[in-house]
Image: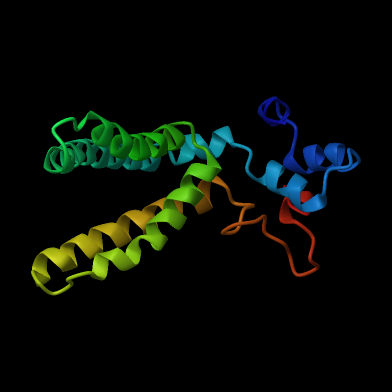
Length: 172
């Protein structure tokens, strides 16, 4: 599908072509809606590069923090360092490859861990507020990029119009 889209075929034409292949309509709409559009990638290249830079910084911080945590737990901290470092590296790879699932999973995991930001909230109010603002800003930035790079995708599934038809099938 990606090769067909890259060669100039419209999303709607790709959707119609595969519609008769016994693929469920929702799954097909998901697959077509999450295709990478090179023109959108170029348009938002600077913003995505900023996100990649942020993820590099987060990865470096995670490496040093996990090394310190590992030293507290056991002298053989390489396993902790490796495990905690893999997660931001996977996101970094997904953002470099402009993968829809990477943006989505980052947002979902960030929200699921958001309640941890409020543990001991107020012990150092200025640091807590700054950390919360930075976290929310990164989540909003990832959400913005996800919406711009994949305009036919909603939060978890392909967008529909008022007639309950998938937008990728009628507007692309």
